[in-house]
Image (cartoon, rainbow over all chains, first blue to last red; front, side, top):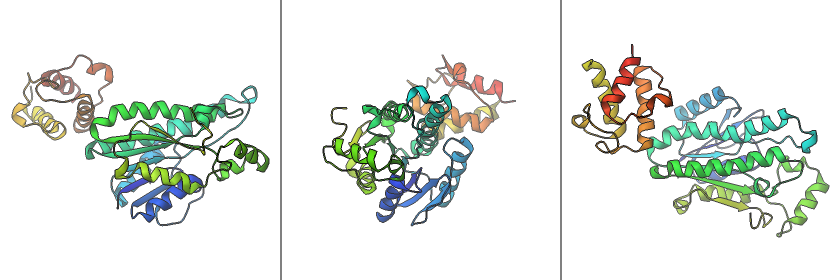
Amino acid sequence: MSRVVLITGGSRGIGLATAQRFAALGDKVAVTYNTSAPTGDFLAVQCDVTKQEDVDRTFAEVEEKLGPVEILVSNAGITRDGLLLRMKEQDFAEVLDANLTGAFRVSKRATQTMLRARKGRIILVSSVVGLLGQAGQSNYAASKAGLVGFARSLARELGSRSITVNVVAPGPVDTDMTRALGEEKLQAFAALVPLGRIATTDEIAGVITFLASPDAAYITGAVIPVDGGLGMGH
Amino acid sequence: MSQELFDRFTKCAVELLSVDAAKVTRDARFKEDLEADSLDLVEFVMALEEEFSVEVPEKELEGITTVGQAFDLIAAKAK
């Protein structure tokens, strides 16, 4: 479809799968990575979303090489797990800075050109734990819940300009981030899921590309669970 | 009032608010006469900041409803 798509955190996992999906649709795709550059049918730009100057440089490069961003997928995220009593303030602050303030930085910058274009799609990747909670992930869950209020406020601010803002809330997905939990914990997690398994990254990417498609034009401020039923009711 | 400054101000208004230059008069009210909503005004102020190389804090925008008020605020800063 040849739209300009920017995906943060695209070196692996959900971000990479999403980049590959958009590329397969014929879109002009850019991904950001922090340490290891992915290769594929897309432009890869080094960007630490906790640094405003990185975000500015990334958008400048994407605009120069591909054009103004029409679809933003804010996906970059980190974890610093630990029980509250053992969690350092720095662990909490760093996760919020990357996962929530990072989404703010890229959304704000993308909005500048979307407003002028009178259209745009912003998709924020949250998590089932944002609304369900997860012992040992109070920082991560807080950042992911924060994305919901952020997205819904933007949906109200930008709706009159045909810019939609939605949240995708995956459950456990087969990525490096969840593998870090260890096989045992992952199996226990999967057993809690009504569908009885964890998701593939492609199953999340498919919902993200749907939210960017013409069929999703009337969806905004929504939180779409892609969690095998794990978060039902939240 | 510098005509040169006002012309540049008007040019921004025409571009950002999609109005005829003739409607950009000192007495024109942004909401009622120029049909600008809050987002239009945010974009307009950002364009003015760029055009005149000035910074306008949110606080100073309070109570500003007309073209004349906005122009005076910008012109005072644009030295």
